[in-house]
Structure formats: C-alpha cells, structure tokens
Image (cartoon, rainbow, N blue to C red; front, side, top):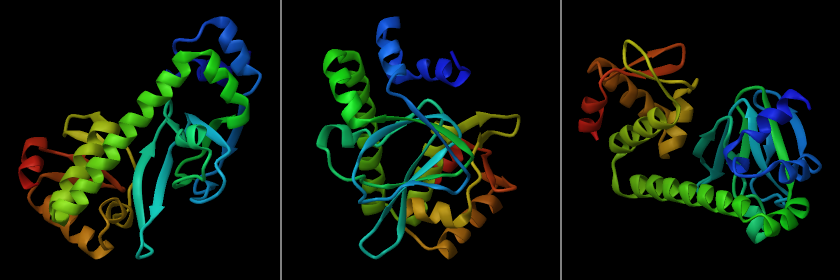
Length: 226
C-alpha cells in the first residue's frame, strides 16, 4: 500500500472505520497534487467532491457584496473541506486555493453517497466537522458585525494561534506565512488598516513579526486589546 494512502487512513474522518470499510474507501480515492497558489475550485462551481488534506495547506475564501475577498479559514493536513456539497448537492460555497504545495484526497459525491449510508461513523464525522466550521464562521461574522477592526484583528490572531500555533521560547508562533493583505481579508478591512494594527501591536510588544510569521509574545495582553 502506498505511503500516502496509509496516511490517509489515519485522518480523523476515517478513524473509526474497520479494514473492510477502509478497503472500500481505497477504491474510490483520488489523490491530486496542487502547486502553491493553484486554485482547487472556485466559489459557485458545481460541487462534485469533498476534499481531505494529506499534505500542505489550503485557504478558503468568499467574495463579499463589495467584491472584497474574505478569508474564511486555512485548512491543514488531516482536515476536510467542502463537506457541505455532499449533503445539499449545490455549488461550492467558497474558493479553495493551495497556499503550499499540497496533496489532497478527493471523494466524489456520487462515489461516497452509498458509503455514507452504510457507515454512520463517516456521516457523523462529517457532521461534526461541519458543525465546528459553522460555529467558527458564526463567530467570525459576529466579530465583523460587532467589533471594531482592532477587536476583529485580536480575535483572528487568537483563533489562528489556537489552530496553527506552535509553542516557542518567545511565545506562540502562528505557523503560517501571512501577508498584511491576507490579515486584512480575514477581518474585512483594508491593507492599510491591517498595517497600522500590526504596527501598533508590535510597538506594544504584544506580537513580533519575522519573515511573514507572527509570534504572539503575550496572549493575555493581546486579549486585553480586544
């Protein structure tokens, strides 16, 4: 069995399956490789598959009414995305872009439908993932509606630290290369506003920035800013 298939079986969505069920999965897996900055699918395209990341990271974005890009989240190995199309058969609700060279497993809707019916553990895992995503999006929308840009920036940095944080001697390193424009796109503001916010947080020694990566030096102090 190829190594990436072995790794695929370890992903959370398939953790409860037995050997026979995994064998069925192996017959319908498609593995695709994407280069950094390559588009995987575009918002509004027909939803044909759900995706699970084996290697690399993927950015999910949505266009706002004003034409701006809003970043919904960044997915990493072991995480699934586009699950919603399995249940509603509609178009992809967001655009997916590889932000690193990536290997991604695809399960086409038409192939997995019967398997989901036969294996409740898969459907439960997908529903749990969708519920988690819904809570995250709801929180993001509340932040955009109720908080000022500083409060929204604090919220997104806190969330990114939780999802992608690595403990270091200095603090919590957000293990993502993020431009100020991308940070702005997380909170629906301009790059100039994001620049000012990041600069203020740096001057106050709440965060540090090195080669595009942010380290939160004092999490408690950061939360107090929000």
